[in-house]
Structures are given as C-alpha cells and as structure tokens.
Amino acid sequence: MTSSLAPGGPVPFDAVLFLSFGGPDGPQDVMPFLENVTRGRGIPRERLESVAEHYLHFGGVSPINRLNLDMIDALRADLGRRGIDLPVYFGNRNWNPMVEDTLAEMYRSGHRRILVFPTSAWGGYSGCRQYHEDIARAVAALAEREPASATPAGSVLLRKLPQYWSHPAFVAAGADAVRRAVDQLGPGEVAPRLVFTAHSVPNSADAASGPAADGGGLYSRQVMAASQAVADALGVADFDQVWQSRSGPPQIPWLEPDICDHLEDLHAQGVRRVVVYPVGFISDHLEVVWDLDNEAADVAERLGMDYVRADTVGTDPRFIEMIGDFVETYATGAGDLSAMGCGDNGRTCRERCCVPAARPTRPAVAQPS
Ligand SMILES: CC1=C(CCC(=O)O)c2cc3nc(cc4[nH]c(cc5[nH]c(cc1n2)c(C)c5CCC(=O)O)c(CCC(=O)O)c4C)C(CCC(=O)O)=C3C
Ligand SMILES: [Fe+2]
Image 1 (cartoon, rainbow, N blue to C red):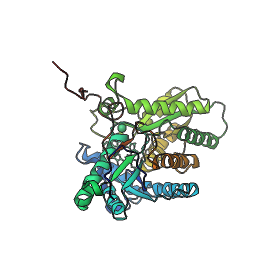
Image 2 (cartoon, rainbow, N blue to C red; image 1 turned 135 degrees about the vertical axis):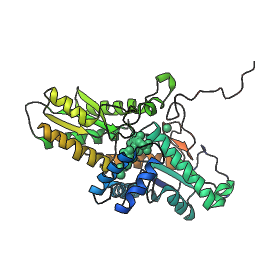
Image 3 (cartoon, rainbow, N blue to C red; image 1 turned 60 degrees about the horizontal axis):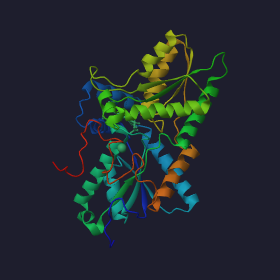
Image 4 (cartoon, rainbow, N blue to C red; image 1 turned 180 degrees about the vertical axis):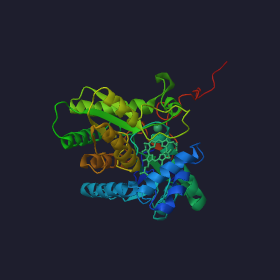
C-alpha cells in the first residue's frame, strides 16, 4: 500500500466481512458467550441462567452460526455469478469467530478495504451503533496486533453497509414467508391474525435513538414501518406489532406487549388463528426458535389457538441478491455514504441514525459572541 486511506473517499474494496451477533457451539461455550453478550450491562443472574437453559436445551449449540454460514455460501455464489471476485469472511461480536480475529486474518491475507454486512436490518443502539462499535473495537485490536495497520501506509478501511429494514427485497421475502405460513395454517372461516415481532429493547434505549426532533424511537418506528410494508404487500389492513425476548430487571420498562401476553389478549378478544412473523430477525436463530417456537407456541396450544410462525428471510434468493447488490454498488467506492447505518471504521453514525437523541448538538464552529 502506498497511498493513505482517507475514510469517506472513493476507494475500491477487496473483501467482505459478514458481521453477526455470534452464538455458542457447545455447552462449554454457553456461559462465556452470555458473559460476552451482557458485558456488565445489569442483566440479572437468574435471567442469564434461564437463557443458558434455552441454549442447553439444544445441546448448547445456537443455530445462528450454521445459518450465517448458509447465507455466506449463498452470497459467495451470488458474487460469483456477478463475476465479483471478493472473498467473504465471517466475524462476530460475542463468539467465535470473533470479529477481532477475523479482521487480523483478513489483514494478514492482504485485505485493506473491507465492506461490512451487518446481520441486523435496524437502526438504534443494538441494531446499528453496537455494530459500529464492534468495527471500531476490531480496528483498535488490529492496531495492537499489527502495528503497521495504525500507520497511513498500512491503514485499513471498514465500511458498514446501509440498514435494509425498508429494502424491497427484505419486504418481499418477508411477505412470501407470511404467505407460506398462512398456507400452512390451512383454510379457515376467518383470516388468521397477523402478528409481527421484533427483539424488545429498554424504552430508554429506544427513546435515545434517532433525531431528538423526531422524539427518538428510531428502532421501534423502523420496525413498525417494516411490518406495515409487509402487511401492505399482503393486502392485510389489520395487524399487530409486538415484542419478544426482553431481559433486564422487571422494574425497567422495555417495549411491550410481549408476544406471549399478546396471545392471551388476542384469545380474550376471540381470535383463534394466528400467524407470527419475526420481522426483527433475518435468520431462525435461538431467540426465534426458543421464544416463538417453544414459549409462544406453548401459550397458543394451551389456549387452543392455531398458531404458525413464519420463516425469517434467511437464504431467500431475493434477500441474498440484495446483499450482492450492496456489494456490487459499494465495491467500487460508489454507493450512498449518507445512507442510514453506513459508516467507516465505526465512526460515522449521525444523530439522525443511532447516535443518542439526548446528546446536545453543538455548532461545528464556535459562534462569535
Ligand atoms: C435489537 C436486538 C436484536 C436484533 C438486532 C440484531 O440482530 O443484532 C438482537 C439480536 C439477538 N440477540 C441474541 C441473543 C441475546 N440477546 C441478549 C440481550 C439483549 N439483546 C438486545 C437487543 C437485540 N438483540 C438487548 C437490548 C439485550 C439486553 C442486554 C444487552 O444489551 O446485551 C442476550 C442476553 C441474555 C438476555 O438478556 O436474553 C442474548 C443471549 C441473538 C443471538 C441468538 C442466538 O444465539 O441464536 C441475536 C441475533
Ligand atoms: Fe446508525
């Protein structure tokens, strides 16, 4: 490398990093994984122990790693069909392969300009800013391991690709998943109630995302807009938005209602047939299979309701093609750098995205008095 790499400039990229949450690969991984996830964020010990049991129920193996590798294989095939010769690497926030290790491996293989695809579609802290933080942490760790990466001549550029919660491919793939679930439920006198779920977050975290002028709530507004778009694609006028997988101490408010409480409410209203679509996730990982296929399904069964959970988008060819389109567009250094979620080396989320709304905005230049 001879020239310095100024973030934000039009540079061609030479590799893709598929960046995800991570999950355990065996019983011995479960507690260390959960400790990495919560990193002292005040999740009660009992909650961690009960979440550990969910993982242990599946032999301590989260499906998330296999599902990510399936998506990566599909993406490689898609890039191959386009004649795009960029290798795709896999790294995670909370478990092996850790993003710090993956980036070091990429660097040693000569990669300096890396497009990062995050497995979250959303804005907000957990969905967007935390992935920027992962990138920043990996770049900092690289500077320790490979000091040349901290010099202008050897510097790396990791560019996070945009959020895709409103992308037509995400919406179309979701609508088809709901159609399949409705078919699986079979014919009935009344159409099933359509219920969308996404991961709950503390109300305070939701309030802190997005521009203060809009009142924050970026994550919950995006989730509701995505659900609305899927419902519109299906021609469904009435649907519900609910949340799942809350944790934290009970006295701290999180986005509600929870899916299980909501099924009770629907039953009380006389609803007997439900299709649940986990719009908040892109693969059928543990939060989906435990909280929806076990807990919520048990509630529905106890209440005598017909219940089908729709597939997440996963390897739907349109969804994989969307990732391929992002790579094709951004690989040359083109692509909209102001798109929400997009940013270099973990640095560029703006107040309109996942920067806390409460943060006071200061004029860039001191005002004359
Ligand atoms: C918005 C959001 C997404 C969607 C965006 C995205 O996809 O990134 C998401 C995804 C996921 N969440 C996952 C698992 C967990 N999330 C936890 C904890 C938390 N999630 C939160 C939010 C989100 N989480 C929050 C505010 C917490 C509280 C504590 C903290 O801020 O850390 C905990 C700790 C125990 C517990 O509290 O339940 C676990 C085990 C898995 C992997 C599943 C598998 O292994 O297959 C995935 C994909
Ligand atoms: Fe952001």
